[in-house]
Length: 152
Image (cartoon, rainbow, N blue to C red):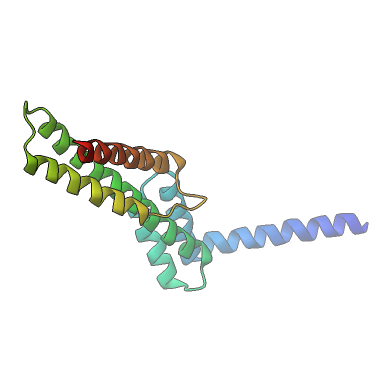
């Protein structure tokens, strides 16, 4: 046989063995499922599956990575949920004809909390760009709002 054919067959065989290991190994099977849930934006489910996979095999780097990235993404999702809730409260306050000093203080406090929370977030390369962009948009809205409240 020619050396090129032998090397090609060896490479294909090695890849098949590696693929079968990933499919048969319960830790990597859960990691692959976790990766799927991470990709579709189900970060809680992805974190749970990755944690299970990691508990089966602590050397499973895929599980560890998905676990860490899911946790980061969940922080972004939580920030956005909280931001929506606070924006709704602020919009309700803004509907009043006269905004009292206590309402201004409440808005100021909300803005400071959200700005402080944003600085604690740290995206990674694989964090969903749309999620990071939405979070940054809220952050900038809170910055502008705080600036307006402080001017008055």
